[in-house]
Image (cartoon, rainbow, N blue to C red; front, side, top):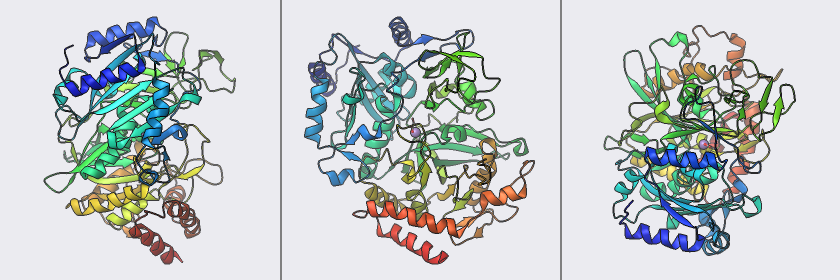
Length: 584
Ligand code: OXD
Ligand code: MN
């Protein structure tokens, strides 16, 4: 492939001079290339073909068992000063990071091929899209990037002779956690990732560019890069309302974005624009418009079933790369929470024989599917729209077993930013570390903000003056539990449509609400519970606001305010103090 962009060619040459691969291969994104690379991956044992009758075009990848999730402790924001990265990020000085990681890269691709992967985050030709180029020695990364981004010739055409592209370098090395670093250089629009093969660490368009570098660019250019799904809700009359929602990793964004409404909502339809990331800007009409920078889903497999997410099950029926799921004797995939009886015998995610009742998980809890969005039966016709979709409501939702009610609307934009900023969530398997402890995860961006979190809140507050018709902001919690037995109070999944309907009715100003000291909640009878098999007592428990729990919550939020004290906007501190004063 002839490439005549001098800035690109010279950067690739200099990275090749550092890493010293045997070959440099430029990827064009063609189907022939996909076939050839897939064959190579199969021949080298990187991919295992699945039963092609049952799952055409699908393959299984088993990662190194030490490399199964994002590593937040090894992820660095390399800004000139520590203050720019802020107290919630790991920081390394750029010179130090380039030197330290450069040493690891030096000669690391000897005997290997360096693939040059040009890609676009966002619809091709969109004024809001960004071009990146990832250099990698991993065929698995190339094949995943091909699904998750618009990769190949189209990206080179969009770049033309421009020099404005993200420079990403990835080397697997020997996949040793001692030599694993994910370094971001926002000022240089550069990412260096070594020592891992796990998606969130190495598919550099996703968390690294679309969120960490993206959020930095967003502040500079007055837009928002957020860890949010985007969906459209079509009513029986044909009106479609778009909503963006932030939930932490592995808290159901993909399920929510692909939801099928319950039977009582005949004629309603959910359209998926994106399941993980939203880039949002003010449009000429003063509304906030969003694009999904990705073109595929890197979703958590366990728990995905025809009950929880039928559209995802259809999406992964073909052309999908599975990572760390279990293998059935007839060459199909399996994971905990899938439909049907648990198989008697499987091969587990590490390739070991597994028997039902062994007490071990067959699939890793953070096992994943990488699937093209075009497979999704609910894909929005606007998923590829260069202008994106207009957002009427923003939802923030954590995983909270207590305290946070099913749904609450903020009093105004500043209160909404406060709700997002103080979001807490119980940790999941998407990142290495203890699972199930509440941590503050502001706007679900704690692991993904590319600069100081207090400045990030300031940016959110400042955006208000740029959005003449701002979306309404809500807080939800699908995960509240019955303290008696730990069961979830709200059924979730498709029944979340009942909450979503109230949200969009509120966004359009056509349904009332009850004012509480903490925000607006549905009035009795306003949540449509038709055909829902749930006792009034459980609905009450899911929606209740208990001041004693909130007193504790406000106290816990103090940790975040203390940690970010240098830059935390006074407007958010005031919100907290006002709410505390109100409930006494
Ligand atoms: C993801 C994550 O993979 O948030 O989307 O970890
Ligand atoms: Mn995510």
